[in-house]
Length: 408
Ligand SMILES: *Cc1c(COP(=O)(O)O)cnc(C)c1O
Image (tube, rainbow, N blue to C red; front, side, top):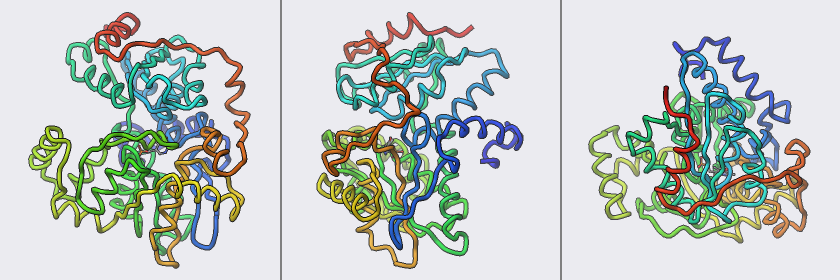
């Protein structure tokens, strides 16, 4: 990460922030590699405090916010929408920090019980949980509108923690290098399979490749909400209805980070891309250009994995390799197995969530109910605190304005 923070942080300062951020992970290796068979590996990214890979980036982001806010006398209001994992990871990363308030919107009744409790049982005076009557897309649209309201945004110094935040991408690049080097890079190329929603995690892999890491292939694994698979395999980027699945963190139709790939792979023409995206917003559909398709095809492949494919991958990992994996990881593993990567190349599936976070789905597939790790504590005994609000701009902004700290 040093090249990206040069001029803002010394190497020693960066090291100190990382030591604090990753000191809270429960595994000595932080992100251990686990071998499944002669070709397949898991990179376990879920040993952080909230059991999903989002902690890898957000624990560091919390440290970065604190460091830079202490340099000037400023106050931040973080506003975000979550389908589950970003919310808990962001709240954990900033709970109790004096110069930050966090307002997190989640779709009422549409996150798992573990996900909701990880957000609503955090008792800190700067944490506000809001259950919105609506879907994740509705919550996300409300947040976007708050940021687009220039007065509101300036008055409360709004900040985003969603997956387009560059510091998050930066922290995610690191584990691609870590895994590849352990498996023989730079002499030996390595492929990665990534369970994908907002395209943030896999875009970090693309940046790693651009930085010189020998990445043989990036496999974009989607569930039945397959807009990215259609775009990469056929050039068809058209938005469908979101279908709820056992992998809620991937139930996304429009991936904010995908635009970054289209820009870079398609020749870095900002004006042309802006026009193309405006067309997409108007008609909810577009074709990728030939340059975008060819540019992406050099590194990416994709797969759509349905509920049966997911279940089979969970069973294979359990029966064949003794590993209980979460549904998101299973989508990635299924895609890895069908990608036809040359047998000489190791394939690393990113294990994005701890199986205990999605216990019901894991139990349905494997017959085994994974225990919640001790480090999340008495999650089910603690009292919850959140408000339910109608999904209207007026209701949500009134709630935030009453509680957030305005800029000095
Ligand atoms: C967020 C998330 C994903 C998707 O990651 P993106 O960066 O949005 O593509 C996959 N799996 C889990 C468990 C997640 O929390």
